[in-house]
Image (cartoon, rainbow, N blue to C red; front, side, top):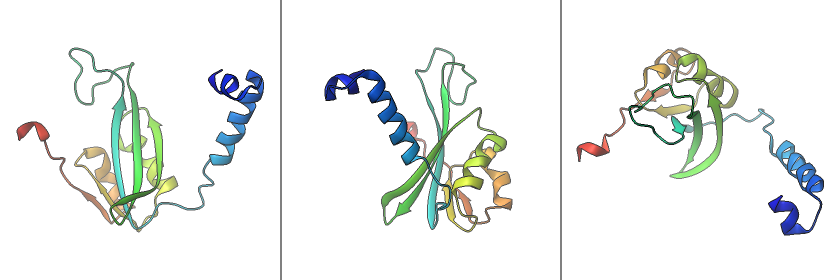
Length: 133
């Protein structure tokens, strides 16, 4: 509605335009991420009392993101909504969007460990705990 009001068009016109833009921006999946790629997973949602870390909450959305590092600046990136943090859920972003010979850097989460078989340059670095400083 905001887009339609802002540009003085009908709401249906704004929706159709939005769909066309989304389709145009959709990945061809022909150009996987390469060189140095950072991968991390996170949750979107407000934490609730008693739910910390990777708790199984129906109110949170789990996401994995892969970003090319181009000389200290972010390059291309992909993100996927995932069901959980298992290797099975993390694997599709690797297989679809990251070259197998890329230098992949991620945290120490156990779900990444089995992926080293097909991505030999995957390095796991333990996350720095900011609360300990």
